[in-house]
Length: 213
Ligand SMILES: C[S@@+](CC[C@H](N)C(=O)[O-])C[C@H]1O[C@@H](n2cnc3c(N)ncnc32)[C@H](O)[C@@H]1O
Image (cartoon, rainbow, N blue to C red; front, side, top):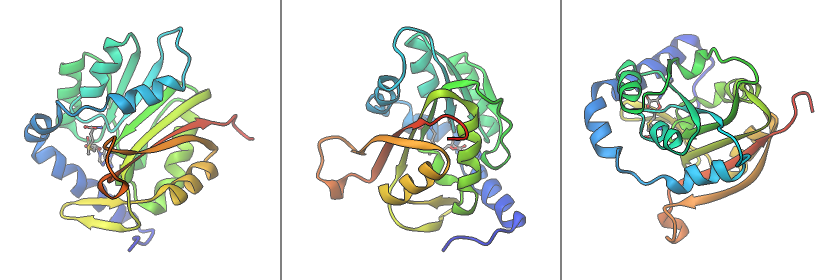
């Protein structure tokens, strides 16, 4: 059930979900630092110019695994996370700048990124706020910028233990993205090489259409 547009509930969603991560930051890092998301990183980079270092926002960067990968590939990644513990871990591990910001109160400069990488993070935004946040991400991208997202798929919304999630399949994801000014370039399911029913993750690569179009 989607929640009502009530700022107290939205605050609660962010603070309870973020506390969940904050309280197990070290074990989350141990459990995810070796996850192979190279397919996702390559999908974003494939859709962007190859001949220059790129400004990439890792949206919900967690402890910094993917910041470090983008940096090792010669890019200029910046992390963003609402968990203070993750921001510190990500800065130390990757030596990249990390913004301590919450998804529902972003302060991003317009036209400042070539790409945004949202690996396992966008689904934490309640449906009622998603159009607004996607609009902010669109504005933060430069013309021709690319947005990558990977989320657990489904057709539900609500609490899963202490974490709030909004799960979508490709059709509703596409509708949100298009309304915010993106064009879906392609999508795929993960893990690779499994039958669809054993692929719980939906990855989408979208291009930011020019503002105002
Ligand atoms: C499943 S983890 C993914 C972390 C990392 N991208 C990865 O692939 O390992 C979700 C991340 O989103 C962050 N997050 C969740 N809700 C948030 C919010 N409202 N504002 C900012 N960050 C949030 C968490 O702190 C966590 O780092």
